[in-house]
Image (cartoon, rainbow, N blue to C red; front, side, top):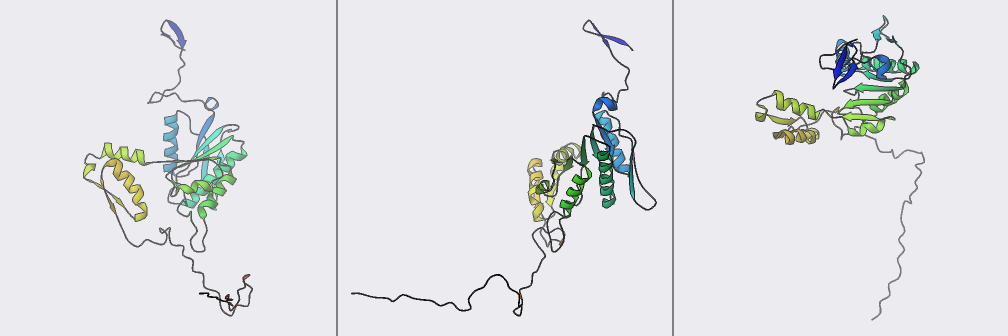
Length: 270
């Protein structure tokens, strides 16, 4: 172990591996938290590796795969007892498979006595189905209940479709914003961005587009047109027919068929 001198004092510096940005990789027992990838796709695993490299920790050892009968199986290859666990989960094209991988991974960590399980989900799935339309269901509320049941204790996501979705969760939610990073990227990577214009695809998106336009000092355009049913938040879609006149059921409210008006006599004196 080499000995270095700083200001006349001797210091022991261990030969631990250094990363390219000057951080030291932390040991599992010293870090107090672990980072796992709950995605079987290559893109999700690569994102988790980049995050662990920036944090200076090792990626948790686990295997996520599909069995021959297309069932999702997760095997955690190390002890997580008493540790804070971060699960990195991106949402690929197969949304439902990614959700099951996240649920099974969280439940496996919960049964392995993890202290806290934090889900890092940049794009929260089913966030557009946060309102009742016709005789459907609020799927976003269902998903939040499933995550809580699986053992998730905290969620970190970005730009929820509606801020009110945070009320669906029974645990803390960090709804981060991507706009500062996008604006910085536009200003640094696009030299002639001053000649551009910000376009809102619908009147409902005009408020967010206006925020970008004001910070970039650009013009704003709004596209008007008939919204698709899946994108319209105003249309309820339900059409309840009126009660039939031949209905014999009791409605609970009885009104007299004729109203009798009793007037007082009018006496005039001059």
